[in-house]
View (tube, rainbow, N blue to C red):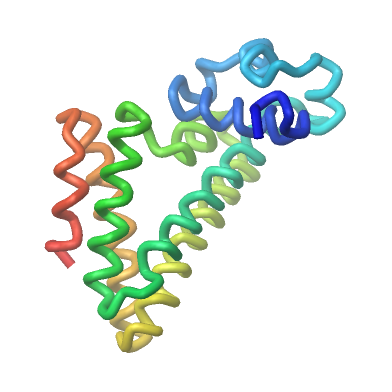
Length: 182
């Protein structure tokens, strides 16, 4: 499906997700999103009545859904938690190389946006969802509830910090070695 064949709302979300990830919330104007999405101005406010903030929430949710799919794909078929975590780290390294060392799409969108309760709460919800997804796989692979929670949160912290260090070094190998630290 070509980008222009997608529904306008989807094009707006994908354009916003890409632009926020690469330029940050404040580095993107609504006109930029409309041009990238090849969408008329009226469509933005039709789909996102509160404008940029509604669009940011939708873009972060889309990016989160992609991450949840990546987590699930990494742990499906894994025999151990460490094997699933290793696969996830390798997939993230590949994504890192593909996106050209961009920042975390959630941080770039929600933490760099307006400092408001809704944005922060949505970021917490998204990150808690990633941790819960990893925790579910950890328990399925035989870890106790306590150990699964600890490993899931540790992996999240490693990934976030690893992504920042990989950006600074412009080297995705940092991400490939994260699971060794679990």
